[in-house]
Picture 1 (cartoon, rainbow, N blue to C red):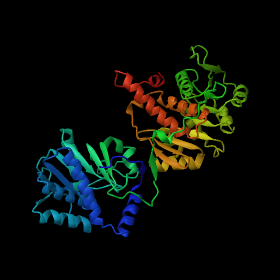
Picture 2 (cartoon, helix red, strand yellow):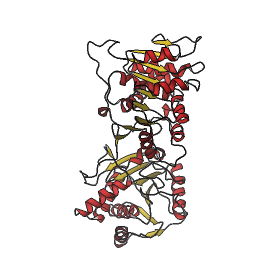
Picture 3 (cartoon, one colour):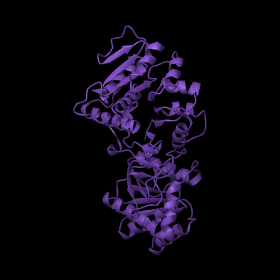
Picture 4 (cartoon, rainbow, N blue to C red):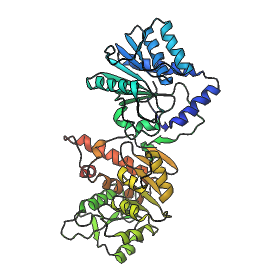
Amino acid sequence: MKDNFKALYSTDSVRKIEAELIKNGTKSFLLMMRAAYVACDLLLSRSANNIVIFCGKGNNGGDGYGLAALLFMANLKVNVFQVEMPSTKEAKLARTFCIDLGMRIGEWDPNPEMGTWYVDALLGSGISRTPEGKYKDAIEFLNAEKSKGKNILSLDIPSGLNGTTGQGYGSIVWASETITFLAMKQGLLTGEAVDYAGQITFNNLGADEYSKGADAQVLEENDCDFGVLKPSAHKGTRGNVIVIGGMKGMEGAGMLAGLAALKAGAGKVFWVTNTQSLQRPPELITVEPKADIVLDLVKSCRVCVLGPGLGSEFDNLSKNIWNSSIPIVLDADGIRWLARELPRKRKGKLVVTPHPGEANDLVQCKELDRFETILHLREHFGGDWVLKGAGTLIAESKTLWINNLNMPQLGTAGSGDVLAGFVAGVWSLGSQSPARTGVWLHSRFAQDALKQKTAAFLTASDLLN
């Protein structure tokens, strides 16, 4: 079983890979039976028995028929229900294989024989609309069984999900496990998919090389550049970061971003704030938000974090920073300024870190999926982008990355401010990949914080301890 994956593909790319294999002599039915074999191997490794398989009309259903035949030959109890008659040559052949072995193929009805394990071979990865009719009924039945503690294995992708985007279409199979074939589908790792896929296993069905380049890549530690800390380094060589934000009433955002920048490598952090009464962290140097002072200070800084807790009273200052040459990490109120002003594409270096709501404001109600959104924003505004959320997307260095370290514990106030600070800190230290390195650090610090805590959840400050 090949569980490791790095390269990620859209469903269209997977179709091209399959077509190339077939053109080069690999039979389509052979690929189907290889998929059935690795799914059978997985179920045997789980000591599964009393297995019920739901088959749709396409090749995903064909995988299900092939799996049923192998399980039957392994002398396991297996029942097969067709939601619709097969429509492809390969699926028809796999169904005939089952019948020739003496298996009975049942018509779907709302009360099939109860199983211990269920297999979802209904729709596959290419769906782009809400499941209807018997497919919807079958999905609802499977989810009801899952809620009773039964196990659900989805073949290729949980039915009701889009394999390219991770978007769900109303009725979605809630899988315990998903085994995906041939090439790893990028949609399994982001968006709604992370709630439904369960444990993911990947098998390339013997296709070790593809001429089709990957559409995205899984982010790993060796993809990061943390900068270089020489033995002779001191605060002057590690670079200065200026944080413009954390204004009165929102001081915490500025503090978190500033402390995170220090934690990630910056030598010194200036915090531009109008607060007077709140005690500041001793590591941060406070500066009044006067344009002439700030713009002069910017000249001695390597990176600017613009936006966390900034409010809407400093739009002119934001505009001046945008038009300067300093590398910017734009977050929170800085992104809201961007959506209001829609300035020209930035020529200077830029990393922007929106959450999905902020990204939707920036694309101005265009109907775009997560992948389309991040690429549109990079093209329109320049720079590199981090689209936060489950399966965070990072568009950096002309490559699309997905962070597969999903941590819902990071969905807490101030977490995004810490991320902005991490990006700025590694950038100040000389990182050539600050966006993806900052994202990776954010997840890793969260993992470390969870190991040290007895509570179920994190606060943003826990990432800095």
